[in-house]
Amino acid sequence: MTRVRVARWDALAEGVGRPVVAAGRRLALFRVGDEVFALGDRCSHAEASLAEGEAAAGTVECPRHGATFDLHTGAALTFPATRAVPVYPAEVVDGEVFVVFREEAS
Image (cartoon, rainbow, N blue to C red; front, side, top):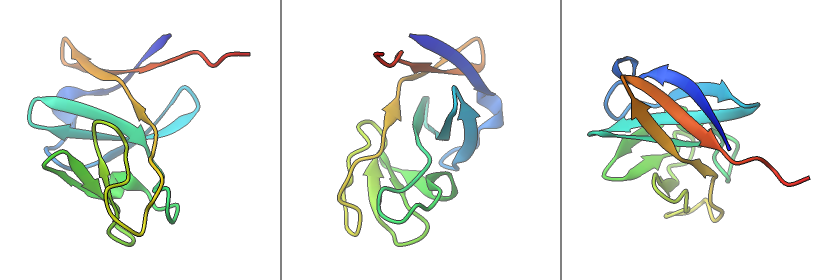
């Protein structure tokens, strides 16, 4: 596993996405309450940036067509999306946000 620093906690606004690139992946970070979430930054329906969507009540809404995704699991909750987006474990340590990536099998 690889743990990568992606942002400062205090640089993340409540419910507002932030796009980042880490370990060669495009991510959307969200701060909701005392939690931080990291998802793949592409809607599975129309390739829109989820970082441009709004997060609330454990979900993020795609800004293009309104599909919603679960921040914990990445599951597509509403149409037009039908496929999940990837989620990555995220944690805050000493005011820094880290995302954990599993090594891919070769």
